[in-house]
Image 1 (cartoon, helix red, strand yellow):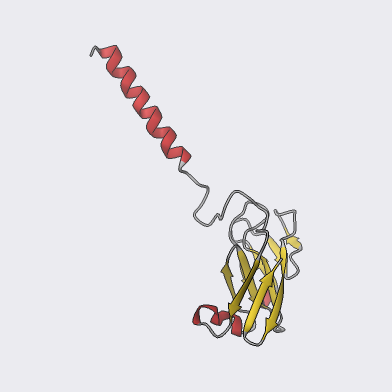
Image 2 (cartoon, one colour):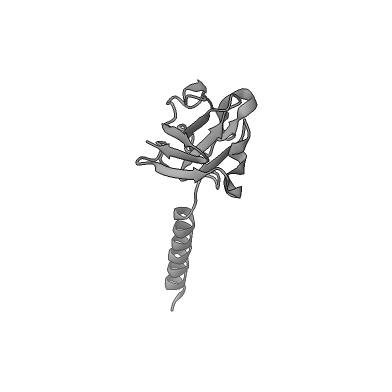
Length: 141
């Protein structure tokens, strides 16, 4: 192999390596996906006596599952909205004392009904129905 062939093969190898690394990149580990829409066809039940769901037994508590945040408001009602921010799909948290959903990435906030209260998000969250029967909480589209 002469010098020209050697340098060409190194260049190709470096370019291939860079491409593979860039394809695997994501904007942040907190990002749930590139889609800023909420999941569709939601229909599942949470057992409120299960340890994994204990946070929903207290006003202001919340949990995230199946692409949905389920929260218990400070007044005791259950709320369910998409888990990802409509701005860039980063994960949201529920701030019960402020009655809102919050995106720590860019500061967007949403009311408990899913409406944008502070940008940069410009689209409301997808909301889901909740139905409490005994200790079973159904979340559905």
